[in-house]
Length: 125
Image (cartoon, rainbow, N blue to C red; front, side, top):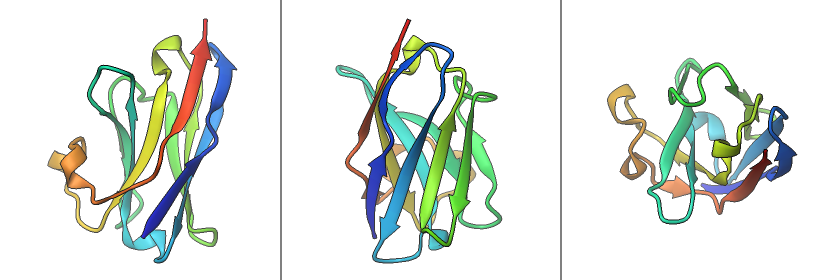
C-alpha cells in the first residue's frame, strides 16, 4: 500500500488543521493507521492510531482531547483532526500503516511497515 499525507500548513495557536492520509494499492480498512510527528534533532513521536478492527482510536497524552482520528472507507482515507493547536505541535507529520499492530506497541516506529512522505505543520504563537 502507498500512503500520501497532506493537509499541513501554517496556523495560529488555538487554530485547527485536518491532515489526510490517502491510501492506494489496497484498502486502508485492512490496516491500522497511525500518525507520528518529528521535529529536527528529535526522534519520531507517536501521535495517535485508528485500529483496523472496530475503528477504535488511541492517542498520546500530549494530544488527547485535542486530536481525533476518523476513516472514510469510500475514499480510502484516514483523517487527523487537530484542534486547539499549540506551538509545540509544530512538526512534520507522517502517517503509517500496519496490518498487525497491538495496543502495547502502537507507539513504536518499527510497528509500522508502510509510511507516507510527511506534511509540515507549523503553529505560530
